[in-house]
Image 1 (tube, rainbow, N blue to C red):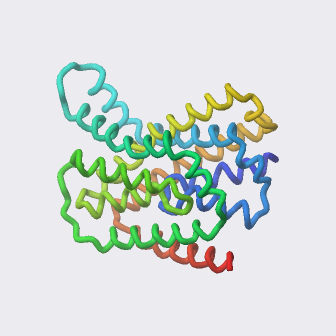
Image 2: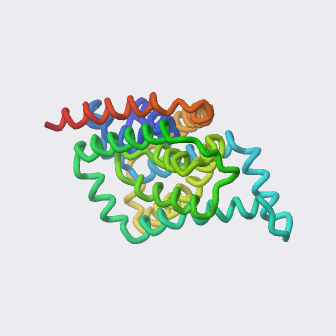
Amino acid sequence: MSWFEALLLGILQGLTEFLPVSSSGHLTIGQELLNLNTSAADNLLFTVTVHAATVFSTIVVLWREIEGLLKGTFLTLKWNAEKEYVSKILISCIPVMIVGLFFKEQVEDIFGSGLLIVGCCLLCTALLLSFAYYAKPRNKESISYKDAFIIGLSQAVAVLPGLSRSGTTIATGLILGNKKENVAQFSFLMVLIPILGESLLNLIDMIADPSLFGGVGFLPLAIGFVGAFISGCLACKFMIDIVKRGKLIYFAIYCAIAGLVTILFTI
């Protein structure tokens, strides 16, 4: 992998991880259209590296909220709002954890099935974002345990390529009647545990099979990390502001166009 390919893939991963347009779908499309070195792009070490970068992006942008949750959870024995919030995040992670542990091979098979499913899932993302935009606001004061689990189910479904994780979880939360700012924050915090868990499993695989480290050099890894981190920070801040303004319909239009073009491209 060249440093330019690493930079391009890192920026693409950082942007699309937070914007409701599907990071996995766009990486698949990008590799097809640009004829990138897919063997390097799929390298497990590079994947772990750029995912770690997006985790750091979330931590930097939402550090004040994360710091408050950590203090409220670990510095007191009393049950409080912080412990309740963390409990809801843990509950939301259950569905995707089940998918990752028991259906990993099936998901990987879907990823290798071509662009048609990516296009179809992008259209599904467009529909979800449209429903969220036109849904009648109810503005619940806080996300309930039930809503947290339902949002978690949507995150599990969003492992499909082309189905945006952030778009699906945010749209689900809004359709359930939760406040825009609450849903955006919850969506970005709930992804930290699954990404860290996936990275840990990948690291275990690499330790068990050193050949998975591949031939990616330090420079491409470093450039990919920096690209994903910087673009991730910008995208995370931008997305939170977009959700607060209720402008998800623009991303719905984009996903609809991208989905249709992708489907036509496969015909």
